[in-house]
Image (cartoon, rainbow, N blue to C red; front, side):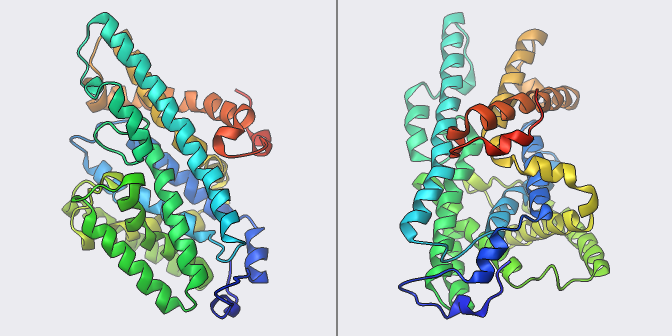
Amino acid sequence: MPVASDLHTRSVSTPVAPPALVRAGAERQQWIDSAKGLGILLIFFGHVYSTVTPSALYVYIYAFHVPLFFFISGLTLRPAAGPLGGVVQKKLRTLIVPYFWYAFLGYVFYVAGYLLAQHQGLQVPQFDYGLWQPLTGIFIGTIGMGRIINGPVWFVMALFWTFMLGYLVNTYIRRPAGQWVAILLLTGLGLALAGHVTLPFSGVAALTALIFFQAGYRFQTERLLQAMSQSTRWWLLAALFVIGLFSQVNGFIGFGEGILGNPLWFMLFAFSGTLMVVLLVNVADPWCGWLAFIGRYSLSIMLIHMLIIKSVKVVMSGILGVSIQLIDNDVGLGLIVLGVSALCLVPAVFVMERYLPFTLGKSTPARAQALPRP
């Protein structure tokens, strides 16, 4: 990844990507895909059970699994990659277009359930928001209060703004010290607002995530991983795992909703968990090919998995004659939901990648050629 010194001495008015940066962008590193794969599996698992009364395992996972994805996004940042208008256009296509497609798909699922409940005369708490609030909430772009039915899509909205802010800071501020000052100020603003103010377009989460995005970018540019010996990586991995065990002191984290607990504890456990995953997929790289494969489709999984999980729970509720709340809190039933949802994900992702690439901001279904047929 980029290490060229001219990264900080280029002209501010006409930024040009350094050759080393361009060459690095062409090389796909398996461990980055593996980190995405492990991260999306943690997010998938994290949406199976209830978070109203989260278990200790959930507290541990939620402490870092979303910051991990912002860190990973920063790993592949290429400042001055081209005209700003072109960069914005690309990110609108690859992030905002998928956001609207799958936010509206979530609303369609919601309307179908709402009308069915009305027809059967059922009072379902999930439908207390009516039809208007979830629809307008799509255009607000921030999770909470019934605004986005397909909850995980808030992430791609936040990532758009985090990326754009990170891109501007690293392209137009010359020195690393100045970049860090800007990032820390913006992140500090996000932390100050979290839990107190709700901004549209997942603005609070986008600001808070900037420090993870920037850390990922500098992690690559400074080649910190390459500077570690294999034994150092193992020792550090073990230490980070132990630190993460104390995440219980900060309680459950809801990143998208601004539930962060103590800011210092939040940062400690978010970074320790993120770096733990990065080191884990590196030391285990020869055995992580399957994780890398999953990671290549992490966006598709992120966009659709919650709708599949909810659908499986509704079907199980009808078949077993039990409430969804019971399914949310039962370990055994949750494992069934996990298994059935995972099986359903395969054909769903296949269809998205092969036949609906435009919903993912892709012009052609090139990557779908590697997907197994359902």
